[in-house]
Length: 235
Length: 235
DNA sequence: ACGGATCCATACCTGGATCCTG
DNA sequence: CAGGATCCAGGTATGGATCCGT
Image (cartoon, rainbow over all chains, first blue to last red; front, side, top):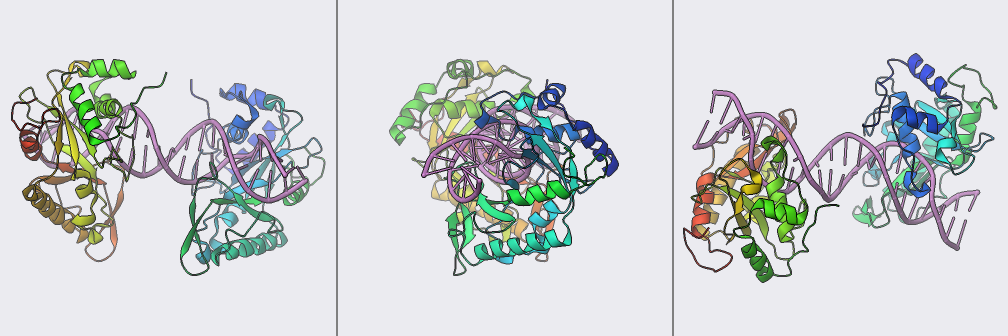
């Protein structure tokens, strides 16, 4: 029997209800209900949690140009958090188009579209057992003007550097809330990026990631999906 | 257990030996030796014979830009033939690049590369039973000057017509030895082709096919892989 | 009989993220 | 801890061709 997937939510209210209903559930419960296996060594289960939550909420799988909930314009992100609610690391946003970097603009960027409206679903990590992890309190996020200005400044800096031929000298240290990091099957995968002279060089594919501190602030500030209340202890 | 695949042949002589050794074998024998299943309704087994012979000869699977035997520059084609050795229909050559049609040239075309050196493997069809079909006498083919002129003329006509915006009015009736026909998962798949005014229209993907009469002539004329003899009754 | 439509296998690509060493 | 490297699932594209109604 193939794994199950719920139908897409019809509106934001339905998504909010479904998300709230996941709070407190263990991944084991979800996996069993949907017919998904969480077994395997930790190295081999990297994307499973995200895909499990996609199924549980009725997100459309593996769709490139569209958000996870196309009818709602909402993107879904799971965030691994410690028991105190702080995120355990950075979070992937999207692949960076290195080749087109010199023509990129924030207004039309994938980063901006993906972060315009996000449903963050915390997953509380206590041990190594995937099935034992529990869903925290889901939160909708829209960047404040201040947050968007910060994101935009980082985006312009990073993609601007790539655009003038600095892809190979950029490290993940650049950027205050966004960073560029490798994003590929392995280090052998190559793609094109501008050099400093209008031509192109081969380099590894990169993705945009949100730094931990930024995610932490978002989780602390954002209203919860169930009550609309703002609070720091609502997971 | 996954199906087996022989290692690539090191040179043309090794390929010639392997091909000759397949003559007279039934597809059932090959399938069993390689751990491949030929079961299923006829509609569902369309590409299996070709892939079975690829495995048996050590061709590299599903490789786009490269020939089936990259080290040798040789392309592999199976050809279903009646018991008298005549081909049962046309043969697929490659996908046509409609979008780039106005920039296409025979010299750099995929059609020319794919047909420059081909190993044709006849498969003798007597009934509906796949496993009962037998491999005929394999033949290497290089176009004669006359054949290449004919192919080139058809290619120029066909791709030229697409290049000036006639993709939707072209039928498989055009071309003496080459033709253009639909090539897609289904009729809903669309791709871009030039219109008559420098812009593009949506139309179904096409492939180049060799007409039956052309294949028949090739099989009748080509030396057999085993003896180098030329003959019309060597299958 | 053949022109238009279709079907399977498999490689590749993208989105889902976490792993792991210094 | 965090930067660089990696891993799985699933959809899409391509190469393998034959099906089937007119």
